[in-house]
Length: 181
Ligand SMILES: [Zn+2]
View 1 (cartoon, rainbow, N blue to C red):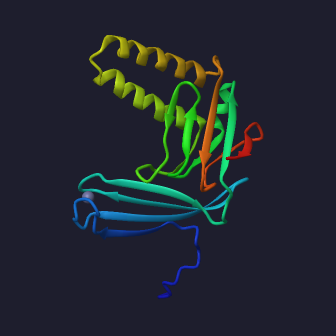
View 2: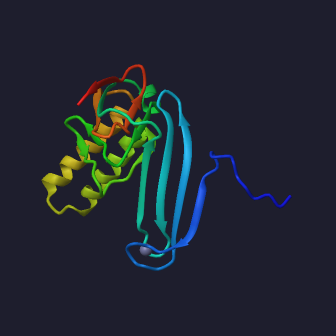
């Protein structure tokens, strides 16, 4: 009793009531978590979330230095939705000929799966469909949503490419082809 020393690195560490870089109130929570991702290795997941202004930033970094890499995955079945995807803030996600999510300093890093990527794109397209006045753009968005649903059911093929100059992004599957950028 009384020994508060913590050796277990796998427990997420949390720092609350920090100053938010945006609204400057002491309402920011910092989280850091270490996670072992099979076939990728040990990762650090960081996030900051402000309960006042809703500022949120998250990123992921491998514990070992990685080479710049590009992963390409042919999606052709519903099972592919479960394939794990690691995206660092520097990773650019391209669902070829459908949508692109650029990486960069304003982006967030996360661990998800193919379905999670498709859902993110779906939310963006839905927002466009709901905010757009132009009926032609609205129609295009609706068609795109149908296409995304078919892809997630394995009824339509698609290609997912993730490129990351830091090498901190990956598609974890035997089906994914890894190459150099
Ligand atoms: Zn804030």
